[in-house]
Image 1 (tube, rainbow, N blue to C red):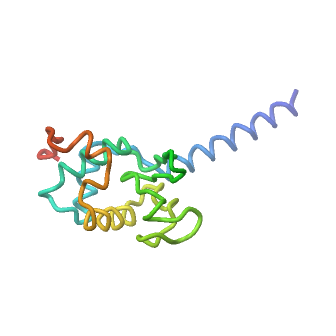
Image 2: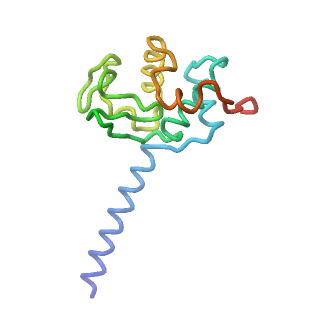
Length: 145
């Protein structure tokens, strides 16, 4: 009986450590946390509601979201940056010259830089979520954040 308890204890301890590490690697931001983070990373206040809407529609404000697309590419992180052109899985590359997995942690500096590169080339039209849920619609109110 003691042997079973120690195996179960070891399993629970390992599982707890894995869950703790996973939780420290990603965040689900509130709307105001997101707005403040975007401002901290030099997103223009005049477009802040559009960026918040974009992130909400693309990732649900989760830094750890990844989505496999029908064309076999994967979109990563808050801004759902796609591996087809912007990053490379497992190594640095793409237009943003970064490993896609770097977009899955709670440090959004690299995500922000790449998102601004995408925006500077294509505008908000680069994001299907913005096109379908934000363009021409009422945007989130972040004035009290």
